[in-house]
Image 1: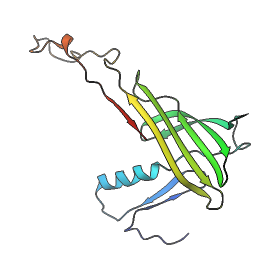
Image 2: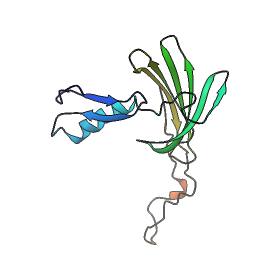
Image 3: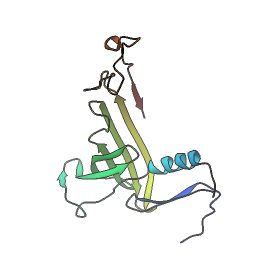
Image 4: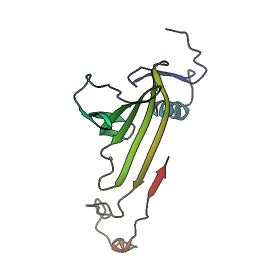
Length: 165
């Protein structure tokens, strides 16, 4: 293994997309380390080719399904693998979101370079809209039985959404 300078931000990623280690200076602020790990996780994936895992071959390439654990929690994903001029293109689609009843989509396109043996480009397209009134939410749950100053039944929940690319 090559020696790494731990005062610089770097990480080790396998050819299968597993981030094995994130390097950072000893004693670095926890928030900074969390940001560095988040940046490294952009490249993280479960990369497989046809014949390595069960899947189906279609006109758009080889498709397989996996269960993953990421910063957003456990989720199911579908990967579609197709050939490119320099290697392989992996398109990951997250199938569910940890926020129940939310409208969300997530697709990560990763270009794998055969000669370099690693991912060299990542494009993430994501959007999310939170449910306006969470199903089963009771604002009085766990409160003392007193007359509230505000009328909770008229409380409006803010729209929460984002789109990123």
